[in-house]
Length: 285
Image 1: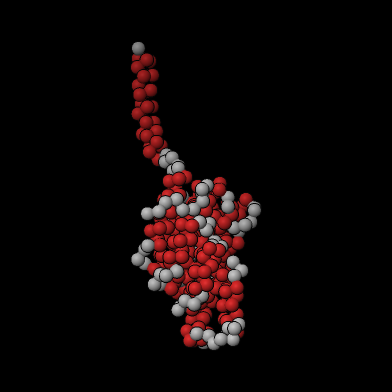
Image 2: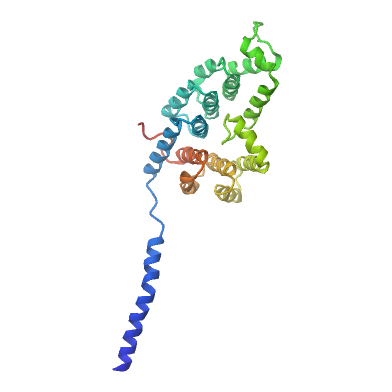
């Protein structure tokens, strides 16, 4: 009788000790993955909200992130609308993204943007047109190289003064050279970042360079870099993952949607829309 009691007591004691750990394990288990349709919806909403932000820096970051997406009508329409934004940095981001995604339907709008009152927008629009091998882009580059138009007509007063403004030209050149996300036309922020951390932009460029490397080790390196302590590296790595076109890496982009840095969130959202079956925009609000 005593032995039966001892066995029963031991069993009860074991259950009492193990139960909390079982409950704890149940509480900490990962939530089920969200349906892909819901993930696309969340990503598209995040970008829509970003484009409507009051802060021009966030608007520019959201628009620049969209360059990795496909030129679907809804996406192109949003970018074209931003070509009329009051902030030149936002117009630069919109023009750059239209060029990056090869939105050929936007060529007329970009041709008009070449004559923007802000020279940095003109440069971005010209670069976008050159990406699509459009003559208007080559004409603008000819003007910047020679200081005159192919037609022989004089430059506009605004363009003439810009070509002689050394500091402004250096800033524009820097913005175009650092065209990768997250800078996207935000030259001052880029300069500040470079002064604080010279390795960040270099590593970010390295991440982008691995976008088309077929070696599986590069894919793993990009996944790790998507969680890097440097947000510039995180953003570039996420874009590189999207450019690889490897749908199996899609699940690695859900975490960055909650990143504390807006530019990283926007890049993750745009990358998810590129990799998700069904493509880009899913809803309009």
